[in-house]
Amino acid sequence: MVLAEPHALMSFAGPRVVQQTTREKLPDDFGLSESNYRFGHIDRVVPRPELRAAVARLLRLFSKNGD
Image: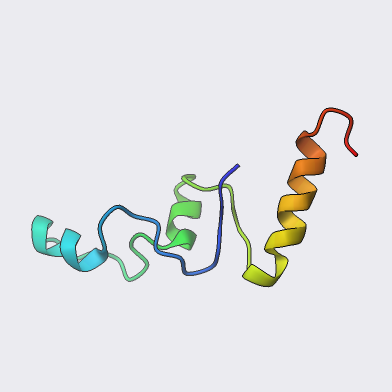
């Protein structure tokens, strides 16, 4: 499972570097967690205040006996 915070930059290089290299116009949300979610690169976008509960829920789900 891959979780990310909203608006987190999730790319090797930032949009400015990629745009200068490729000389192509990039979408405004290039490399952001929401864009990566739409393309299936991450599983869920979770706001920081909810992150602890989300990770705990996943650990319970994937633990051997669900405790």
